[in-house]
Every structure is written in C-alpha cells, then in structure tokens.
Length: 162
Image 1 (cartoon, one colour):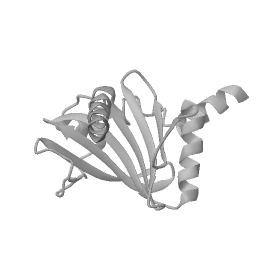
Image 2 (image 1 turned 90 degrees about the vertical axis):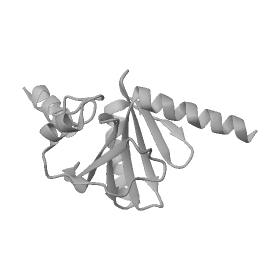
Image 3 (image 1 turned 30 degrees about the vertical axis):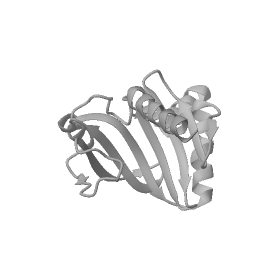
C-alpha cells in the first residue's frame, strides 16, 4: 500500500495528470482545441518575438505550475500547436529545484551552452530548461518536428560562420 501511495504522489508531482505532449494538449492541435482544454482566460500575446513569422501566434495563460505562479505559453504556426513553454521570474534556487525535479522524472539531460539543459522525453517531444540573466526560467517543450527544424537552422548558421 505504501508503494502505491508513493507512486501516486510521484505521478501527481511529475505532471502525470497531464496526458498530452504538453499539459493536456498534443502537437498539431488547433487553437480552438487548446482553448477548449486550457480555458478561455488566455491573454493573446500582442507582441510577437522578433524571430516569430507572420503565421505564428502565441496564447498566454497565467497558471500555478510546480507551486509557482508563471506563464504558460502556447506557440502555434498556421493555427496548429508546435511548441509551448512555462515562463517564470525566479531566482537561481528555483531553477535548481526545477532541474532536480526534471532529472528525477527524465534522467540526466544533455548540457548545452548558455545554461540550457535538454531532454528528449519522447519520440514526439524535446524539453529545454534554461536560465536567462539569473532571473528568468523557461521550461520549453517542442514538437520533435519543430525542434528538428530549429536545429537544422542552427547548424546552417554555424556552417555559414566558418
């Protein structure tokens, strides 16, 4: 009985209540499908990042995640979900706590330049954890296809710099 309780607690802590690729959503879902799952209290991000293309949209929710209030951001291209992330303003200690939690869940990551940790958590999803300016924490989830596209662009850029 004790083992069952421990497994249930670990399942709930690890985010096991979310059955999709990111939370309850799966890659390729439409904006409408994600809103039906997450709720209609979103704030549409009016300012796209510089790197975003015209056919990309972002929907932001404020949520309690891992015991901290942060943003949940859904990233769509051509109306379909391709990536998502959690975003927090927090100190280094919180980053370490998130890293420990992810290591317990997925094992040790690949350590990349710029304080980035990367896990290939399934055949469909790549996860990055990064600390930006010692105060912003991102936990990014990518569909494998989108991650591969980003990786190819990165390799092309590196080759052009030689």
